[in-house]
Length: 479
Image (tube, rainbow, N blue to C red):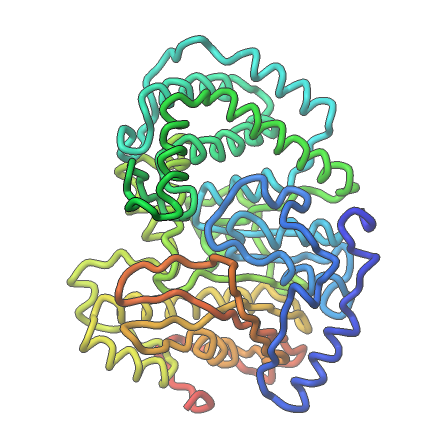
């Protein structure tokens, strides 16, 4: 495992120590380039990271940097990502010899994270793939699932072939293998859809949508022509074999570590016993996590559910009438009616509340999105504090937003909330995210994020009686 994935042969102890000491002396943000800090990671196709695409994925170099040392955790320690998405932190934690647990509100994300971190041995996987391909029926026996605007996104012959493949997958008895097939199928769904492959949020391609002479005109037209006669089963088979190679690499390097555990659907409630919808899921006990590495959603910055709506429908996870429900489960969501935007709930951070009060006069909806985000992130950070062991660390990746032409200092407001709960800031890094394609521009009231802040907090062993404040409580230290 060490030679294959660099853990054990590449250490960040000295680099992290220098950064911690430099920040302790200056208390000023430090500019870094995580790709240079972790130069041993040279490809994105590492282990199972590319098993399935997912919007706004965390740069794998960031968790690697904080895991390739023994300053923050040791092999065998529990690492948590309460906003795990498709499992970047969970996978890197496993490769580093740690035990990984995560949570996410998106059912597709939870499935991807589970499959990415569950090794399957080569021989049974190859046999299962051949068996699956031989079981694909000549014609579907039932109608297609409830996929939003199915005819808009798929040609009729594509729908029929996807149905045939899905029926064969559903007949797979072994759950681990079936989940692997479903994730490969989901990846295939997007490949054979009319959604623009360059964008995370589905936008339908059309012939001649670009003017003559535009560099994308012929490329787009050729892509549409291919889709009109595409052999979906062949595309699916290619995806299967590519993912099989990735899984074999993971299986060979994982050793005896267990797969990642998905502990819930809400970062604010990691105690499943308190949620009737999560009965049976493992709970996260107080003081049980050694290190938290997470990149929460940004306020209104990414349409996670819409981005994967086609896969959610085909996998039967979310019907066309249920999309709004799943959107509302996401912290940072944008789905608010006019009545919900009439009054702002105080965030408990005076600079943020002053900003939001002014913004509310211009754009009540955008102010509500950002204000509710801070209130709910307060709850999530308090839950992280509960489960983190004394002396443990939280690595929080965040970024500022531009709302209605004004900078909303997301990372600064989250820092103030965390310190109010009882965390101590020990390191503040900033990294440009050029070319990462982390965000897509949504509308004229919000803009693309261009820098990420990495805030490192410690939960002190002695809290001196400090307790987490409610969002509406005053905090003199944040004025």
